[in-house]
Length: 198
Image 1 (spheres, one colour):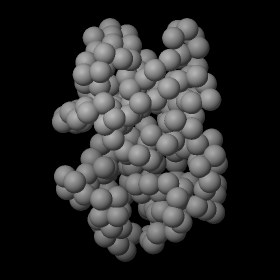
Image 2: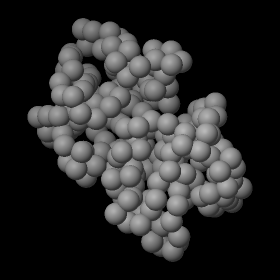
Image 3: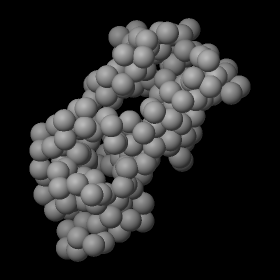
């Protein structure tokens, strides 16, 4: 089944393709079709994922898959949340976002640096799909005081998953996909797809 991925993020495309490709899904990035990302005006991950999926489906004529994800830090009242990708401003790099988060947490002790990644994945069969498939995943951990590792993307170098002694950026792609918020959301999505026989 051909799916347009409503994202221009190469890290997301790699992770989603590794998980969905072996199951018979062909992912095409919306950027390869000349589709620009719409404004993410939602106040929740689910709202933003739906906005992106419906836009990609409308522009491409294909079924579309979108995810919206981010990191929530308890000491910051849940920020950056839905603003994770642009925490340091529109067009900010992963490094700039990461540095802003570390600066805001300067002096906060380890026991108060708890955080979680959240992911909501949405699949729409067409732009007006009245019953989109929605799946969620959560990955608990805490924020370190300095970066470790060179894998992954986003806040991975400072996110230490609960129960592990390596950051998300120090895990292999296979290890990360098995336990991450996106991996868990995709597993839930595949269960939903099987039940819906999509």
